[in-house]
Image (cartoon, rainbow, N blue to C red; front, side, top):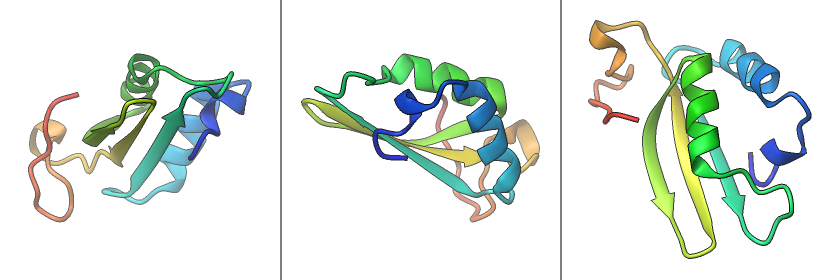
Length: 91
């Protein structure tokens, strides 16, 4: 989702739908950039993602933009391992 989340009226419902559509270990990548008037701060995206059940996999930050990769929890031990076997860091 590149500059999309801010355009969605019910962000939580949209993320729930995306989460349910992904297979375990599937990745959603969200990119936001300024000066988009509907820019979503990373703290908000992280909060919504956690609420839905995503786990942060990677975060890339630029001066005016960021990309956050979120993985659908596989339900494995402590919910911190992707299907690829890579250990994921905390949110």
